[in-house]
Length: 194
Image (cartoon, rainbow, N blue to C red; front, side, top):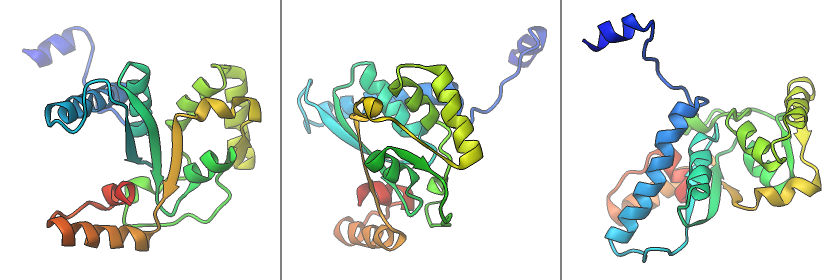
């Protein structure tokens, strides 16, 4: 029945890749759910601000957290956790998005990304939705492999802090958490945990 209805309207389902806003919307819900679970488990009181450490390469999940914060979840800081491919870490610490670097293959492959496609959305918001300026940044990234955000916009990234974990630190974190709890972290979560 569903297939027939879709065909009748010349419509089909497709998967949502990490750049699709249709994938980000359900991820926003995760943060509402996590916050509600913390209240339910009496880890926090309703209205308390919390921080999230999010492992990221393509910036989708942490962007969803940003949108959840914009939608009312009392989030204070969003920690952008990077692996050895620290493009985002370097950006948040200096304002320059620079992919002129050695690409590292790590045990956290979903984070092995130099061009974070969802980061463009955050930049758009941070530069007061100036699409002409954003287009220039993306052209600079394509042509020169970098762009820099002027100081006047840097405060617009204040919801974010950034850290990174090397592959060795990631493996140490997996072992340490396992030794303490018996739980085996996946390498992406281990980056955020570290």
